[in-house]
Amino acid sequence: MKITLDTDKCCAAGQCVLIAPEVFDQRDEDGIVVLLDDAPPAEQHDAVREAAAICPAAAIEIQA
Ligand code: SF4
Figure 1 (cartoon, rainbow, N blue to C red):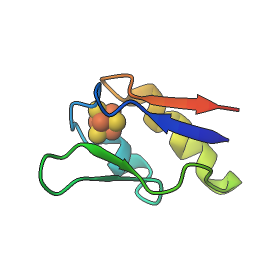
Figure 2 (cartoon, helix red, strand yellow):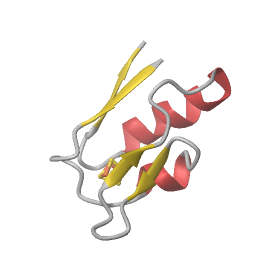
Figure 3 (spheres, helix red, strand yellow):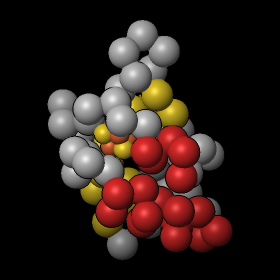
């Protein structure tokens, strides 16, 4: 799994951080998403897929 983010789309909703806090964080100053791990281990994959599905801005892209 490889993750890319479109930070221009991110609306700082923070849903991804709640679902996968080991992979996503938010910038202190404006809440825009920060990628902590662009190739997370297998046990994180379900959470990352859920985060991508729930992101209101469709800012999270996953390559298998
Ligand atoms: S869920 Fe989407 S819009 Fe919200 S912080 Fe994460 S990437 Fe940004």
